[in-house]
Image (tube, rainbow, N blue to C red):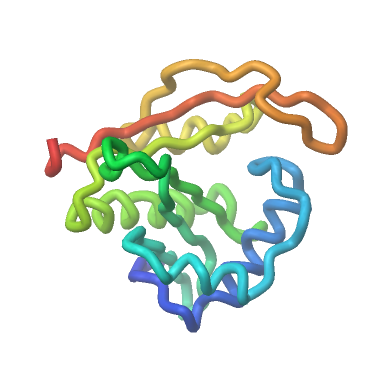
Length: 163
């Protein structure tokens, strides 16, 4: 059974390992350099929640939020990411993590979550739509990954408690 909880610095190594799978697989991020435990520890220094989804006592997915823009008018908007361990993709761990993140951002005053998803990542797009995200457009040739231009779909979800 998948359960969720707030992530702690003790989860940094496993979060890095899951994120690094996503980097290696080239399905969900423009990042190309693996992340270290120390890189992930920096995520715990701000106000933005990070959550994990566990199955059988092991972290199988995470969802994180981060600053969208530095201007004060955007303080209530956060970027998000959600990643699942390879063996747990499509098994509900990522969905559980993003739902937990939606709940976690409301108390810190976030009114909107936004992200970008590779257009061909049908599994992520479907999952995000199923939990209330809407697709608001496409950034064409948003960035290059391994020398190839990639398009991304812009997604957003309002956090009703803060509207």
